[in-house]
Amino acid sequence: MKATGIVRRIDELGRIVLPAELRRTMGIQDRETLEIFVDGNSIVLKKYSPACIFCDSGRDVAVFKGKSVCARCLRQLREAPEIPGVTV
Image 1 (cartoon, helix red, strand yellow):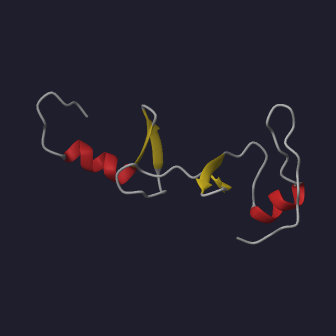
Image 2 (cartoon, rainbow, N blue to C red):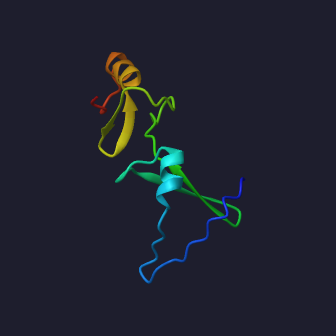
């Protein structure tokens, strides 16, 4: 990990502010969604990019019932042989 020299205090609601310069450098826009990871004792923020639950592709992804599915996998699901009791 690369140190930035930036230190921020957590407010009473548990929030921190990411400095504008850091957001610009990282290409993070206002209201953009970030994903939060834990790596040992570190908290890692990453720009959120939905990926297909089947192939992990980030292209042409749509959300269906809370799950991300790409157009290719959706097409394959529609073409798959029928499974009794399962409707696609």
